[in-house]
Length: 166
Image 1 (tube, rainbow, N blue to C red):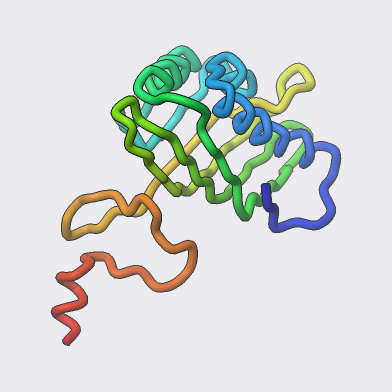
Image 2 (cartoon, rainbow, N blue to C red):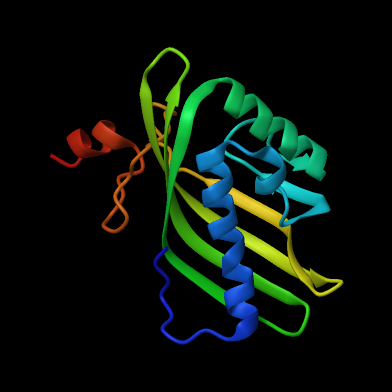
């Protein structure tokens, strides 16, 4: 995992440990381990429907379905992770993550997304209470840009905007 920070406090390290746990859970296809760092009432804005999911049980079902539709371990890379501990009980993390997995038909999928997580410290543990995952969309086609460039200038309407600029 790469972070944008060089020196981390104990709380920042504890928050970022969540992502090491997710990585290991994806590699071993372990739903319970993946969900260990989430609050029971977590609200998730995921890349898959619905627009909003509330509750840990919903996210567990999402992991179970994803594992049933894929085979083998998942590769998960975290980049430019930035953690900000606001006070003794609130923190957030932003970053980019890439997942590579194989669907049951044998096709390998690579997906790069943006992530924002909000954490609350409850009973001495940092738990995700809100997660927002998004992937850029080509506004002309409505199709996800599964591996968009990290930096650079976006073109909101893809080829339509490029041809109109000529």
